[in-house]
Image (cartoon, rainbow, N blue to C red; front, side, top):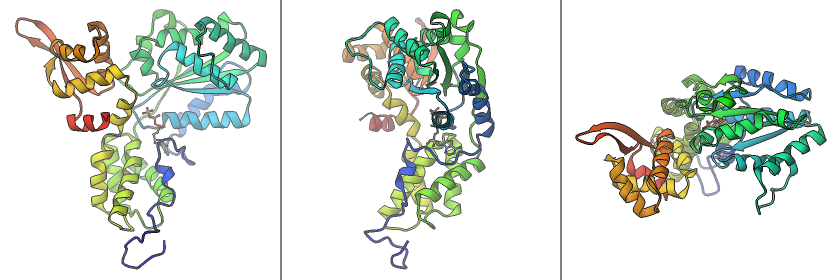
Amino acid sequence: MTGDPDGMLSWDESVFRDEHVFEIDYVPETFNHRESQVESLKYALRPAARGSRPLNTMVRGPPGTGKTTAIQKLFGELAAQTDVQTAHVNCQVDSTRYAVFSRLFERLFEYEPPSSGISFKKLFGQITDRLIDEDEVLVVALDDVNYLFYENEASDTLYSMLRAHETHSGAKIGVIVVSSDLGLDVIDELDARVQSVFRPEEVYFPVYDVTEIADILGERAARGFHDGVLDRPELEQVAELTAENGDLRVGIDLLRRAGLNAEMRASKTIAAEDVDSAYEKSKFVHLSRSLRGLSASERALVEVLVDHEGERAGDVYEAFEAETDLGYTRYSEIINKLDQLGIIDAEYADVEGRGRSRTLTLAYDAEAVLDRLE
Ligand SMILES: Nc1ncnc2c1ncn2[C@@H]1O[C@H](COP(=O)(O)OP(=O)(O)OP(=O)(O)O)[C@@H](O)[C@H]1O
């Protein structure tokens, strides 16, 4: 970087060489520290490259541990080197069986199924016919599959997919289910009829340790910042804060925000204070992501809770009903989902004279939640 020697940025300078590398959808060039997981996935997928049905796989691990990235990388390789069809479905967005299969249709045919709505049976038939006619193998990654469980759609979705080769002879579909909800026992929560046909290979993605985090983020910083912008002590500071949370996304967001903070001070280098103040926002990346996927009524409950923290579920319901007109059953389902997502805590407590009742609290600072709902 050129400029005056006092370490100040001039108007036409930036600490960023390429800010895009800090964005959420950026697929990194190098993907270290996940060698054994990638090997296991390759082993499961290898039959597909030979034209056979791949082994079904269950990928588990906390948020931000590289699960999606590993699959994207392997799908990219399959697309470049084989005829295998791959489909990555984000179940946070497509959270019903119909939506999932619409996405598969779109992937294979390169246009959306008719919006007038065709029956599931027909949609499914068109997908399998296509695979049989073209003699293609399809690998489906159901990413964030926990969302299908929250909507009670997981068993139906998997059952159709796993039995495709029986119901439509010759259709070869393999599935990779990906869950970052460690409280969810995927197999246990499926219906018995699904359990009897689903014996997946298991691949676990543990959190990265602080050394691995520093290595990965150091590499990202070298691509994203100009030389000399981020020194070792600040990189280590970022790595330690990230390790506290375990989600690599926190670290990537932290790098970008710390860079912006340095620029705000017109400084050519990131200082410890830039990292500290960035962390006040970056530590909430997970919350932001969870909130983004919520429906209007789910958001409404979060909003109601901001004013009714710590109250009993029955009392909170009155305020919720006034906002949404929804019944108690749906209300209970929403509580369960928000609890599983870690946005709220719903804990049973004994209430005098009224038996056991759930008390609802936000799992995060109310102000941080409100900021991110807007
Ligand atoms: N080994 C790695 N090398 C480089 N970047 C990585 C690595 N692992 C993860 N990342 C980056 O961290 C971020 C989160 O990774 P990813 O989305 O793959 O996590 P995930 O485990 O799928 O998370 P979630 O369960 O929340 O969906 C991504 O931006 C990705 O680029």
